Length: 473
Length: 112
Figure 1 (cartoon, chains in turn purple, orange):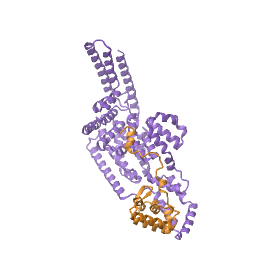
Figure 2: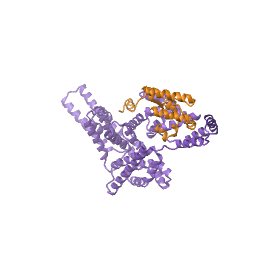
Figure 3: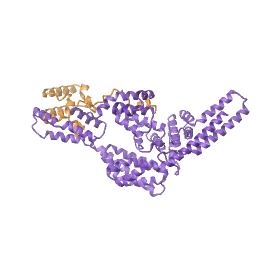
Figure 4: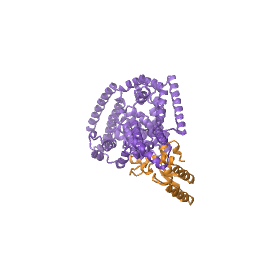
């Protein structure tokens, strides 16, 4: 009896939270929480019905006993929390079952039950030992995403899990590729990305940047998934603020406590501590000419462009009056009588501080990306013309591909700006189209957030206004 | 010549790295280093075939050694090399972290 009372309370709680979330979702689209009332009702009704049948059958078959009560409560316990049940099925490698149960775990996965289902299925595929079977299961999950009904809203969490699935199918075991794909969704509104999904993406991305021993890259990863707070991200953020940026006032919880909470991540704590000196080296601590030259090497090794402030500091340090006198005197010692040596040095310095020069291979790579962007644009336009292009899941796949190729140009800022200038009209059209369809707000938002810095840089004021309008909603 | 030097002037100090010298080296030191290294390579000492740069170990042969020597004997080119000189070990990562690769990180974070 107590069990059924508990189930009823649970249903009431589920219904109230659904109504509240639906109300919020209608008021503000970025606070995206989907409604999944129907499956929840069906699940709980089925549970009640099932429990009643089990109870009646057991009463008939078995006499009153402790074992019978235990069996009843055991079954109730399994099904009362679809989340825990899905975890069990994940461990067993039952893909479809874990997918269904995680989808029903509305209380835990209310940010996006469908995404949670896909994610649970994805995790379960990792337990499948037969490679062929695993591929089939992954394809099945991928199709679940691709066949999201046209009328259904598309949520950010679903797009992120689609990337996991797609990478597992097309580039199995290639974490670098997965991280690159994840960067394309950096601009998605993250309210509907549930914590386990974001945590998984963070861990994958961190594993990719830790070997480079570069704090900047680690912090960039945390910024992409900025609003996700886990023991791991909290520890890294607090460590960074306290020991590197010295923002002591913003650390509400002491590093010591954060460290205790992140007890499972010993290797990461070691990484943070041992990379402290390196990070301090790579900060703007340019004291003498040797430091300035070292800074040039650090920046080149990290494949970064020089910031304007950094350029000025390096130039001032290496070409100030004192330096000139020093090298003129050394030139005399060596017997260099050609006075143009100093202008040669400054010219070389300018070349070094310019953005990276392109090799033939890189130029070819850039050409290939421009070509790919062109094909993707043609493909999308063809689908637009055919009037059959209103499936948000299908559209998201094409746009993820477009953004992925666009992001591949990020190693050269000029080329990326050029590409943006070429496709700004196309992006504008797409954004407007997505904005007019409530099911595709997320795609409009994603494109707007991605376009914002480039539109500003290219001086496209009207486009900038449209972007600001979308981002302000 | 080292390939990277063509596009990246901050590699101008490569002759010092090839000969394993610093900007304090005299002309005699340059001669001696070039001779010693050439002999070692001819006698098949594997250690002499590699030299350190900030980008890791590079290979050197008799031709590269002669080119480096001639650059350092030219006052103008030596001046350029001195200006850009940096100790390769200073640029290497000073981190004490044991080299853990991406796959090991994935296992440590239990997401592999």
